Image 1 (cartoon, rainbow, N blue to C red):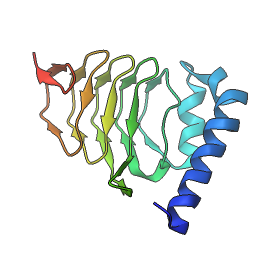
Image 2 (cartoon, rainbow, N blue to C red; image 1 turned 30 degrees about the horizontal axis):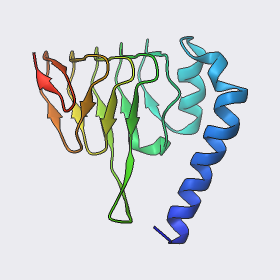
Image 3 (tube, rainbow, N blue to C red; image 1 turned 120 degrees about the vertical axis):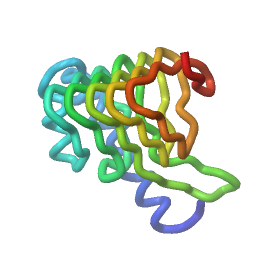
Length: 143
């Protein structure tokens, strides 16, 4: 928690959340321009992606497939502090997947194509969600 790499990561996140989001990216939410801007920052985003959230950090750790929707204030959370240790992992969201409003996907997760995560749900770290399934709850359960 007290290493230079953690402090640098948190500095980038703080600048992003304190400057880039409120002064620029918030105005692009829900438009085709937000995915373009986030691609420039290093996020792998497919075609025809709807983003009504800018809550994405560790830009090189997120992959979003084609025809996806990340709804209002949902977000992939690529890091957590556990016992004063920063743990980071990739998140993969497959094609034609919808993440509901205010849902969180924790690091190390892989959501395969054509899945739906309902609003206010939590995908736990390291979960593998099989294709063509619907999930909801905290933590998620299949519907």
